[in-house]
Length: 300
Ligand SMILES: Nc1ncnc2c1ncn2[C@@H]1O[C@H](COP(=O)(O)OP(=O)(O)OP(=O)(O)O)[C@@H](O)[C@H]1O
Image (tube, rainbow, N blue to C red):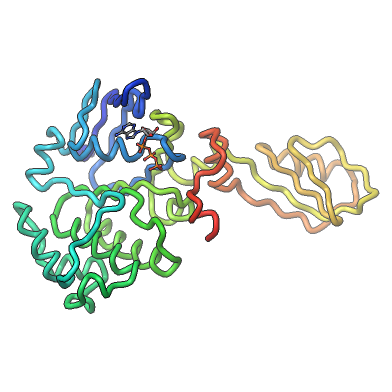
């Protein structure tokens, strides 16, 4: 498969701190990849190196086989960075039209707005747009580049559920058109739904790399739950057992063994159910962090 992005032992230091630590990663063309990691894991620094905004102190970074800056100039890669502002007083179509002039082989303004789901809002002024529309306009500003690779750094930060849904629908339009998309996020549900590959970063290194399902299984514990009377004695089960209100909950990396022992025990249990490991819990186990989410993610 053709390589869209390659980092070869890329390292970035800020004084004493190593933000990205000999990171090696290859992303094939057309892939949709999530970069996951706690605050400070090195996601934004990696994105900045891929855009040529930061130079690695050691190692190599290439985009479409070129130096990142060259790839940017050639319009092969475009990014939606965190907290970028928008010029007020102009319409969505005017702004996308301005951005379009920077690229050698851009899309038409209408195409970019269509991809971002903003066809109806083409003539709306930037300051009259909702948070979700603004975020999709930022996406249109990236999409108009017509680049094969798009980097999105926390694109749905602070969006409500509807805004996030609309944003990812726009992103999937681009993915379906064969673009390579790499996005950094803290929202694990977005990863499950929108990425075919997840790269988990911790302290500037790769903690895990695989499909969302594999990542879930790599670090997570399944949950086995069943009804059991409070006085009933249970056999020793491989996992962490919590009993309350007539239910037992077992968190285990070996759910089959839990069920086998229960069945063999003759204990008086019922209503057994097994749930797969959650990505959330796996993430915590893999990164050793407290919680992957920003405050705003926790209140959702
Ligand atoms: N310009 C800078 N100067 C000094 N330290 C920096 C700079 N940029 C980033 N860092 C540090 O490098 C580390 C990695 O930061 P980075 O922004 O890449 O993490 P992140 O995974 O994107 O985090 P977040 O989820 O909070 O955006 C952090 O410890 C951060 O404080």
